[in-house]
Image (cartoon, rainbow, N blue to C red):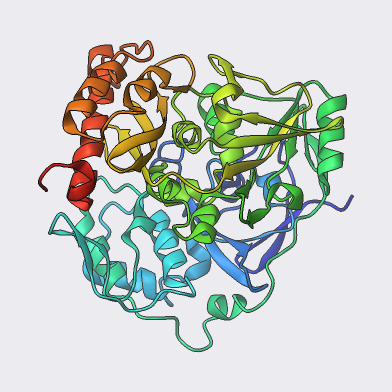
Length: 488
């Protein structure tokens, strides 16, 4: 094995003096690149954002913003990273840096390098084009006239400047100048994954080149932990001092990054980043199109995966309720072969699943055709970038004003995500009317065993369950008043 090396700001740097759990942020700062900061150590503030060269669909490169505080630097062996220092300096500012300075978009400056990197990722987005400003609620512009997607900044927090001048700077950007080296870099292939195996700090980090090799490691080493985006494990490492003796990187395995749509199903590789899932689906699964923008922030989604969200076994993960409603199945792989299990049957207890030792989630399969009426409702203290108090996935079929099929997934109301069987029974065979929905909503409010914590009381969670179904009905009535049988 060659010595691990990382290209940072066009300079190759050996990964010396690191352990299996050293984060990219800590390593960068140890080399003197202190622009990226640690603000929260859990991927919620964006002060640590950097750019990573990732593959695009045409064999070129996309500059992708990620939280360097969550990524093990060993996972970037052989890759290319650009920090705020690599974009420009005081004598030669990058257009993004100049725009923030001229608009008054920086005050204390702690968060500014992270904003610069997130804005730069959008600045270099190949398909960004001028467009009319889109508004929501009449006054919240989410896209600039230059095509800038404001959600690119959803994971960046500023406590002192205020967001208006930052947004103004982003919306005033043009395109890269001719000869811009990072723009030209997009035409060349991104670095391929590099086989990595090194030890440090009493732990080992391995990047196998095939799924079989990864499965062999997981089978032979009971202490091995598979890691993909590290958006969950990174928090454990930073805040709880977690130090697993063996990390097995699976995020770049081709076998876990498949994408297929045929007549019978949509298959999504378990290690595809959520941002990539969203882009490739392009709205073909409306329920996921509602879910993904509410899943943490763009910085997190650029590395987080469906396999990781399911693999943690968390009862408050956003994906399970939606996947339960979609009747999704998981393809589980081990040295013994593959098997399938429904997402509704995957969870067996609090953070416990049917995954056997040495087994991985290879893919998520969503059967087709999809239900005609679907929705994802997330109840949280913030609209975006927050953990849900309650999450619901709805998938209903209607025929002649009657509910012919229903699947409802729930999260945050029990020790596991669950399917609302009693509510489904109260809907199927009944007219899609407000009277039916109110009766079923009363049943839905009693599903699960919600608890009280700092996010919400058990009473509030139960109330939100019932309200969500009524909300679904009224939204459907607005879209198709004849179907609901009530005036819009």
